[in-house]
Structure formats: structure tokens, C-alpha cells
Length: 232
Image 1 (cartoon, rainbow, N blue to C red):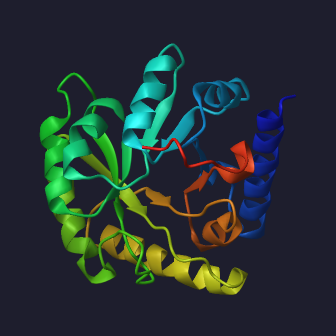
Image 2: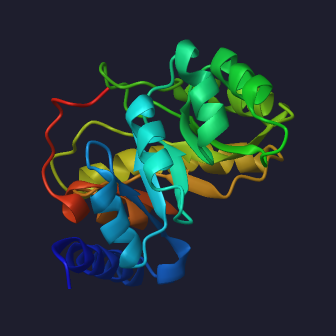
Image 3: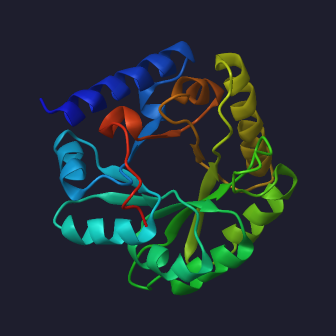
């Protein structure tokens, strides 16, 4: 068993244990392997170990990786900031975009999604704790943005995503993630059928699952530490 395969097994066991502790079924939570800054060989190793969904922050790097790995049945998620000059690449190459935080970006993604592809699956990024370095719509504006995004023809609104500031302990982390869950529930109560709550990473996936996450984004625990020198 390769190191990546062993790491994946460990992460899957963590997810299963966290689901059990929260009274949830392990199948309720999906694993997104965050492969940013790691090359195609690492992704191929993870795929050989049963992982099919991969998250990328750096759009140009991701598109090059996709081309190299086009022979594999992989699902690519954009989980990094989306600037206006990168919306076409996201619309053309990714299956999911987790970081929509402005209507302008959503409109461009919808307009630029190729007609032969299925709708782009999107999550709205919410800044749940007011972190000054974090992207995301403020909670009070999330419902209005969700309604606008849901009306766009080439997008399918799936849910919310958040990246809160690191919390000092499990209880504090749960509290922040529960704020995202409350917004998620509010939007569903308005009549929009969301099914995805993208939150939780290597350090805090247990707290995120306890609060209701349906998708955790894990990179370091699978691929190891990163070098950002070549990231674009």
C-alpha cells in the first residue's frame, strides 16, 4: 500500500468515527481530496486507492493537471477564489465550484458554461465568522445570493461552503460550523433544496461533521505538507 493509499484509509476511518460519534451514517459525508500543488502522479495514486473527487485552488495548475489525467474518470472541484478573468476556465473544465460569493461571478460562470456539459454544480461561500482574510458573502446576504444563483440557467445550486478561522478547540469549532448549518437550514426553509454543506478540513473535520457537514475537504492528511513555490 502506498503512503497516499494508507493516508486515505486513515482519513476515511476518521470520517466514519466522526459520523458514528455524531449519530450519522458514514455515507452521509463525502471526502474531497485537495490536491493543489501536488502533481498528476499523486492524484493518480489517490485514484488507484479509490478516490475520485479532487479539489483544486489554483485554476491554471488544475487545468494542466486535468489534461494529463484525462484518461481517468475524475471529478474536479474548484475550491479557490474565482476572479473574473478565470471564470471561463472554471466553467469549461470543472464539475463543481465551491467559492461563488458574488452574483457577477455566478452570472459569468452560467454564461460561459459550455452547452454540451451538464450544469456547473455550485456552492455559495459564506464568511461565517467574519475572518478578515477570508472570502465569502456575509451571512445576512446569503439567502438573497442563493435565490439569484439558483435562477441562473447553467448552474445548479447545491449548497454552502465555509472556511472559518482556526478555532482553539473542538467546542469552539463546532459553534462556528453550526452558524453555517443555521444559514443552510434557513435557505432550505425558504424553498431552495440544498444538499451540500462543504466544510471541514484536516484539522477540524470532526467538528464539521458534528455540526452537519456533508463534504469535507482534506489535503494535508492525504498528500502531506505542501510547497507553494510553483502554485499559480
